[in-house]
Each structure stands twice: as structure tokens, then as C-alpha cells.
Amino acid sequence: MENDLYQIIYASAATRPIEEDELMAMLKLAREKNTRLGITGMLLHCDGSFIQALEGPKDRVMDLLRAIRQDPRHSRIEILFEGPIKNRNFSQWSMGFSRPSKEELARIEGYTPFLDLGNDPKAIKNYSSVALKLIAAFRELSDKKTSLIDG
Image (cartoon, rainbow, N blue to C red; front, side, top):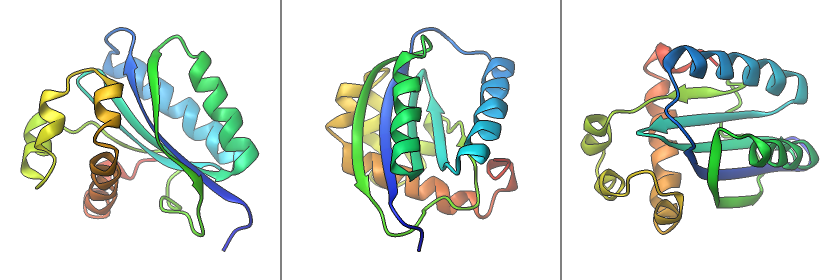
């Protein structure tokens, strides 16, 4: 067990459409920075909404969240979970990534509310327990799909 591990899971809305090449460049930079900082996590991006889990030393996670709040590509950031954790949930990734389609979300039992929320982090916050389960489901799925492990 690492000392002082902290996790934040948040939802946010993209301020504009993000093209695939820009998203991949963002991920590359995030993975490099996270590796240096000892941060691990998972990012889901669907229809202009992000759900991201970040974990690591509390001061570094909080610094990273402050930087994300300043990033002009994110708006309406809503914290879904924040607190100390005993063990990392995403230890194998500097930043795991998935871009689930609505069809993929619809196949996961219990996640249909997300299909109607659109690009609204406040609405997602009302389903924060579902959002946490969604991240866990994609973490488990990623163990089987190497395309998600690239981080």
C-alpha cells in the first residue's frame, strides 16, 4: 500500500468538439506528465463529456485538478468522488482511455440514464454512483481489450 493515496473522479463538458488527433496528443502529454508525477487513472470520453479518475499522492492529484480547472477545453467540472484510497484502482495506467459509444454504454446494465444526460456534468453528478460503476466496468473491460490499455 502506498502512503497518502488520494483519488478524484470528476465529470466535465468539452467546450468544443475535440478531434481524434487532438485527443490523442492530449493523452500522450497527460501520460508523460502523469508518469513523472506518479499519477494513474482512467479517462472516458463520450459525446462531448469526460469522466476521469485520477489517483496518486494527494498534493499532486490536487495540483492536477487545479490545472484541469484552468484548461479551456473543460467546462462545468463536477466532482463525483474525492477522498483517500488504500490502493490504486488503475495502477497499470498513467492514463487509461476509452471512448465508449452510446451503443456500448447501452449494453452495460444500469447505465441507460447516461444516454439521456447529454453534455451536462451536473446531471451526471446526480448519477455519481452509476458513474463510478461505469469507470469500474470499463476498467474491467480494458483488461480484455488491449486498445484501452495504451496508457
